[in-house]
Length: 320
Image (cartoon, rainbow, N blue to C red; front, top):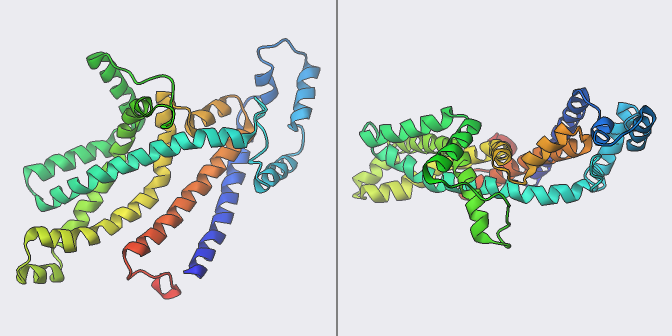
């Protein structure tokens, strides 16, 4: 297991490095000038703009800029400071990341809490009206874009109930009620698509397992259908759900970044959009790279959780 962990950690390094290179050069390919964006609201001359570009290091060769940025990432400065506000990126990230992670975790929790039971019900009632209804709802979740669903729900809540989520974000410690009020609707919308994956995987897995020979044998020994499902069906069918949770968690974070932008949550997504519009290169580069590393770390954690739940899984060379 230690060797497997070392190999996986070693793979994270080139993946994160490749992501950093891509993000770095994509940002430089975008039209616009950081200095012009910063000085847009103040009278300035061309000389002032060039002096600001020189101060920010934007006139340095791209290789020099990339090396300086990577160095600041490695020593823990997370890319240095914002070009627009001069605020340390580490402070920006530490302020925005909890919002995005909480939204993603709320959505994942709702998806698993609702999706697993619905998948079990659909499997036990396969071919019946309940099964078709659940599958239709999950198909809609996979088909409707999150942006459209967010705008539609916001319009319906305002139109039908005269209710809109709070504008000012509050942390759970500051005001739990206000926090849940602003997070519940985005979490439900975000969980719809993920819940659809959970239901489909859980249903397919349980249907397959209930037809296995050892399950038939268990029934023959006199076990009730409930005991068969609880003891043999769900524990084995839940393993693919854990796998898809790890695979989809990065997508879930990406979806959270989109949904939080629509609902005005001060998370990573809204911060990246604002920084990209201002051509604040270090902020976008650093946060995007850190999100990639976070997603890779979550996938690694899911692998070990998978092995902890199923002792038959080992991290040996022959098991791959």
